Image 1 (spheres, rainbow, N blue to C red):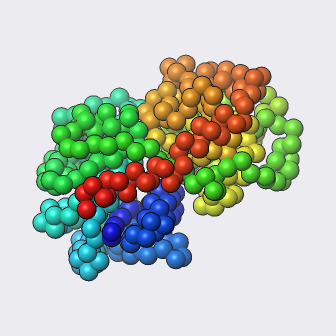
Image 2: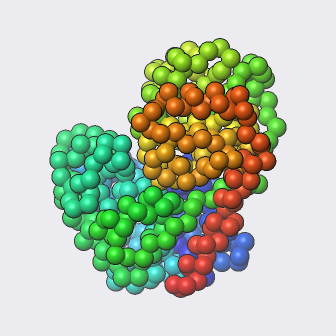
Length: 398
């Protein structure tokens, strides 16, 4: 079986790791796989194809900033890629994130409709059925159910600084994405599956496959992290994100830092230069790491993992922390709450907010979870078990 995967990145960030993990599962079963991606570099040894160039991405970004038509540029790059698809001749085409300024969805779907190969599309967010945004819950928007317009998230990713074309985007997506007859939509959580069922894609086949974690890398690990940062006697409260936007809960951590005494230390991973200027001195921040081993060491060194995100399709960082034996605190919204049970963490009512997170941290410090129960919950999401479910879908459709 030959599988083509398409994603904005390869081996970079959470979706990039998912793509390469599926690649590994396929290769272990002696199937063939090609990963097509749009940005950054692919890991050495991966059979990959970059769609376009840095210049194509920059021009796509520029067009999006002015005209709010993310996904409708990169025509030459996409035309060349379509030739590569025909040359590779896959049995299955597996789509992931098509946003990310690298591919023209109109050209791609016009081709896929005629090419008539089985399509599997994993939704890592809500972009496919909105006129602009990737998430909308935290602003309580429901326009996506009937037709987007007057987007209140226009300046959020994928940001437009000028025009609002959310209505046009929505109608084009509905036309293009409903034109494929043989397509299976996969969501990583029941929450996201429920949203899809209410969208213009609700009549198609929709399957839930939780995200998987590499248990060979994410497991309880010895680390010099505490010693390196002089945190031997501190209760470490950890937060991890690839991008710290407002909806990811950065403001909650800043507020929490004012509520915790010197016995605690907040550590945030993934902080960029812009975000670092907002942080108080009692928050230790680390820039983004793409090393799973390094990240596992940080997870293992922490006493509790906090994910205050208000928009997550599932939350890979949460299950990574659990697999490393670190209990998690999450808000009971979107897909986050599905990964935590009574033996591995605490779900906080978002209406209580940071006060609820503080209470949960204090409770865990007083009555720690048993590490074996936390690890067991994390191991439920081993990538082999989860991603073998994709192989089943491939086989049923190929």
